[in-house]
Image 1 (spheres, rainbow, N blue to C red):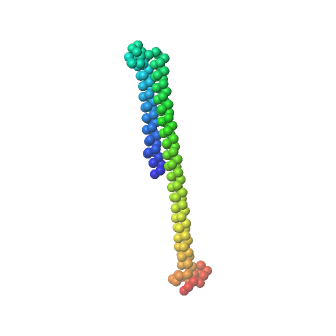
Image 2: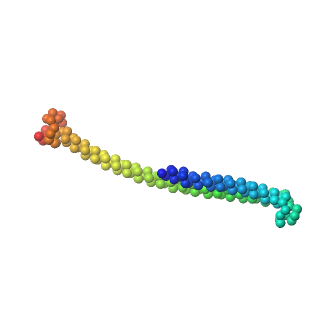
Image 3: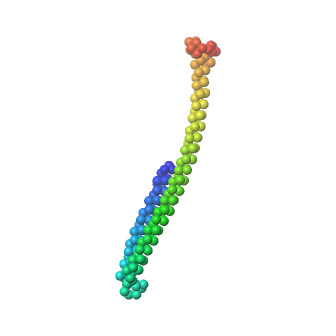
Length: 148
């Protein structure tokens, strides 16, 4: 049950966040390249008609790319931290469940042992002649006279 919680919910969320980070990085890379191209060769209000210098266009594009990579790394680190927190929480739940299950099993074993011991005492009493209706040979084998 707990393992399925971890794999069904938490791990799925980690995969989704990782995929979003990768897609965001690609978007930032293509956006940075597009911005650099637009500043270098396009007609824009910033270029005053002839286009920006190549260094300025390259720097602006690189800034967008680096910012998108930094955003993706931060997103991935947050997702990992959430996954580890969820895994720890599920692990603690498993430990609690195991303690309860072990305690219940030990109590059940003790109960069944005492019931078995009591039943064994009754069988021994019957076998050794404490009850009427057994043969003298059986009484002799037990070494007691019993009640006849």
